[in-house]
Image (cartoon, rainbow, N blue to C red; front, side, top):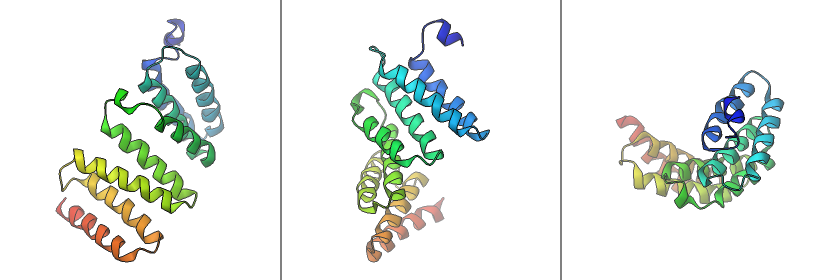
Length: 173
């Protein structure tokens, strides 16, 4: 590719362009090929001394998503936790933290660790409340996730309250 010939792989542009490639392969039913390509690109990225934090995050996060599609939940979880250890002040966007924490909550919920998921659901909601207006649909989505976790833990009165808040927002929108 042009980026490879310009010695820009791995790199900031490549870390953004690899996502559509990996997802396209997965959508075409070539999930194993997508996983292998993602692993290869991540291995290159890990050995690149000057790769930006945001690019490292992109490689880790994108491969984690492909691993989830491939039902390799444990491997995806490891990559998401690795991404969570990156210095987020370098990423510059609360939406990145929201996406990562939401993904971690989803992985933990999928593995049956609803208590762990609840912790991330609360962190996500806190971030969402900081950046979105009170009646934003994203707030309703995150409230729904939190309500689901609370319900799964048998905390029905809390879940009902949170889910009512989400419903109120959905009805406004």
